[in-house]
Picture 1 (cartoon, rainbow, N blue to C red):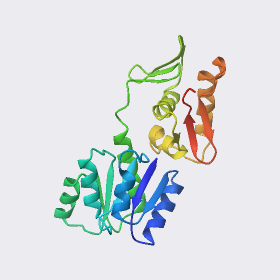
Picture 2: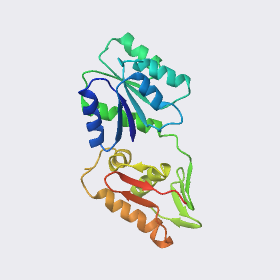
Picture 3: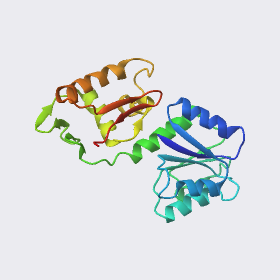
Picture 4: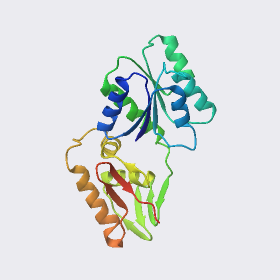
Length: 226
């Protein structure tokens, strides 16, 4: 997951980057609203979530959010602010923010809210996902390569669905655990590697293909056909 952080507090900003990086995400930090607005415009890097402080120099977080929405940018936005009044929360949400977290906040709650925003934004996926001749039918929960059906377990299917839906992009180990196991297993265990080995043995080995790449220190990627 790629997150843009807009925070001008010289202590909090780097701490957020460190926390999100440790959680397995990629985080970019800017310290003013105009920079955040420019980074989030269409045509630039595609962020999964924008984490905006309300009181940013140059352009406040609500204005950044409102202007992006006017331009059709739908990236989920989480606002951080010390302003806790109900009227302020209403202003932020009416400005296009998807969620709101008042300072001071618990880091665990922040991470949970970011995960929830990301999950909601990725729910709408195609009913059939195709990567080369590998086809995954989401509704029918079936997988085939060419004319050959492939039997996967429930967990294997869910892992492959996430990877194929994000083909060409690196999906972190943490993201896979969060979206497939929903925090129900230990991220330090080898359960992910066991499942991926089984998936590769079923979708690649019999066909002489190599669909899933392990990106050392970053996660896994379903390769697009060349």
